[in-house]
Image (cartoon, rainbow, N blue to C red; front, side, top):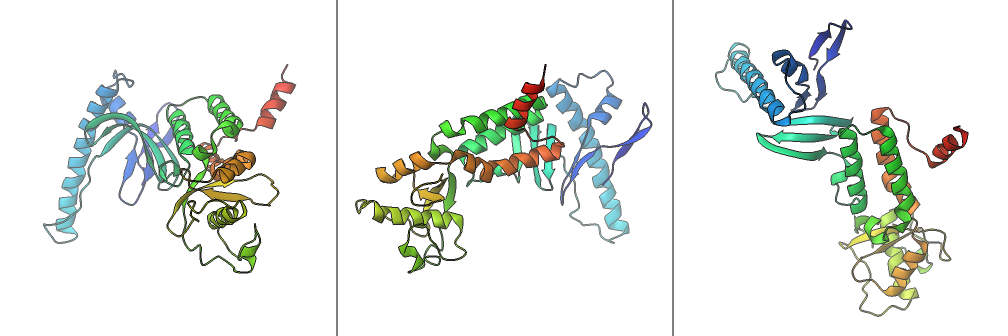
Length: 304
């Protein structure tokens, strides 16, 4: 869909459609509001919302009236379900890919608000670590509020620097275990850190946990992880058992396993595997260069 106008000053066409989906379209109302109300204060959220609804209602009524004519003349019926409806007004929007976007909404179906709404991004996925969800929301809010790239870059680098100081339970990946019996190999399972071919990472982590229960001679009250259990998964640094990941429950684990995770928790591997790619998708959508600690230090070194 294209809704264009001519920029008289520069003599070019401007497309006012921000995004089109299966059953929705996001259009910039700013040109219409400014044309009708040249002196309006565009920073006055309440007034802008009122005027946008006024114009949107006119458009809505006009298009729905056209649908009646279309149904009669083209479909030969007086009854149809074709209808458009104005739903939300956002101050800003950020589209990463189709069906993946964030909006700073100021009105939803006529209800005033001032909040972030996210669709299709991992910010809302329950398996995503809570601290990562919180940080990604902060990044999205900064983007939608037009914070300088330098500020957002520094926040990303700072989060990565202090990640190792955060309690591992707050940043470990959430997961649900299934098919653990399918991947248990009677021969290979006898050796710690070996698995049947094709074993998923989170299942490996659960099998590692169960093996460590035996190795550490943990009391029977600590039951092995089984199908259906909700767990957290920690990535590990090099250790004497050669384990790369380890599951834990977070509320009823033996001290030996918790201490093992504390000793070998690899926060930066977690960042690289769970957060790095998602942040890069934001930067790619904005056509920004992704921040680098090394490049930042080099720039400091050569600035004089």
